[in-house]
Each structure stands twice: as structure tokens, then as C-alpha cells.
Length: 108
Length: 118
Image (cartoon, rainbow over all chains, first blue to last red):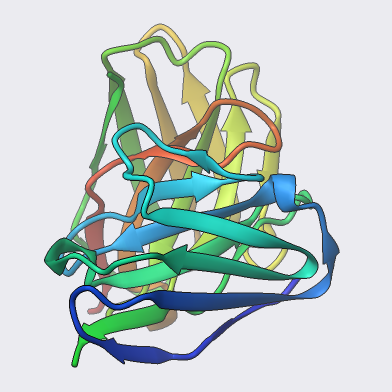
């Protein structure tokens, strides 16, 4: 099983600031098989971005990803009020898919 | 745009079987992979497994001995059956669509809370 560890657990930032979320895998995976989801309270997760930099429909370009091997990063260039939420990384490289434990981005 | 809707009992007694159905609308269930994910209250996401419209499956090894996924193509729906449930199976259960193997979970249902309790 590939374990995904996200850091930090909570990120306290102000609107307009840059958010950098980390996802570390217990073994090397292709960045083609990593996705990021946003979840707001009481809602289902929503696919944001996956692979090298494939944004889901309607996702603005302030969301970007980088990384390879075991270290992957989701960057939100300038936080908008609607971006405060929990973010999960997800690997679907192996037949056993796994999620990270999540990073909460909260208003400072 | 495809929409997914989970349905099933909100309360299941310990040791019984949890059964949920995901109805797919706005598109055919054929040609895609259909997943289940769960989230215990206040916790993170756990991948349960997926089924291809052809019937082939992949299960989370931690649940495999208790889990059965099935698909009903004429009804455009797929189902989850989890036997011998305990309180640890209490969670919001989501169904989701994958375009293909090696693809992310593109569309999600709203989720349904299942509580295991007597």
C-alpha cells in the first residue's frame, strides 16, 4: 500500500496569500497518477487537478501542481475566500488507491 | 453532465450487511469505472474499491473479505454490499466515476451517511 502523508495538517493564511500544500508518498509514483481534491464542510470532494497539470472543468489557473517521484505539491497562487477548505491528495498509480489525510486551509 | 446519487438505509445494525446503490444519470454506466469511497465523521477519505461496467473489480484489501461490488447496466446503477459491519464502518459513503484505469475520480455523488448501531 502506498501511504500518502500530507503536510502541514493545517495552514493558516489570509486571502491573497500563496498556499503551498505538500503530499509525500511512501514509494515513488508517476505524477500522472496523482490527483488533488477540495472538500468543503457538508460537501463531497471535488476534483481540482491531476497529472502533470490537468485542471478539472471550471477550476481556475491559480491552482497548480508540481513534483515527481515521492514529493508532490499543490499551490494556490492567491487565495480567494472560496478556497478555504480541506485538500486531499490521491494516488491511483497502484491497484490499491489511497488518499492523504488532508490539509485544512483556514483563514488567519 | 453525469450525476450520481447514493441511496440506502441510514442505519444498519452491527453484524448485518450494509447495502448501498448509486444511480447514474446524465450518461451511460457503460465504458467507465465506478468507485466507492467512505469518510468516517470528522476524518479523512478511504478508498473502498471500484467496478468496471464489465464487472471486473478491485477492492481495498482491508475490506475485501466483507465487500462485494456489483453493476446493473440496464438500470444504470451499481451497488455496494459490506457484510458483518461494526461501528468502525460508520461513515459517509460516496460513489464516484473514473473515466478509466489510471484516472482520477472525476464526478462524485453527494454522499450518504450510514450509521452502524443497535
